[in-house]
Length: 56
Image (tube, rainbow, N blue to C red; front, side, top):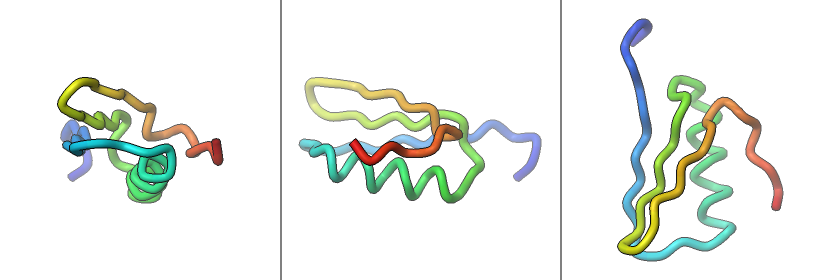
């Protein structure tokens, strides 16, 4: 909904560069949330969801 804050959270047991790339691409395509959090048991990764996902 416009005017409402939106943040994506993704909880995963483990991550790979390919899984991060795919999640970032999906969230970027929606275009609503400025922030994506990917959370694993030992780490938290924060990404700018408005930035175009990189291939590497």
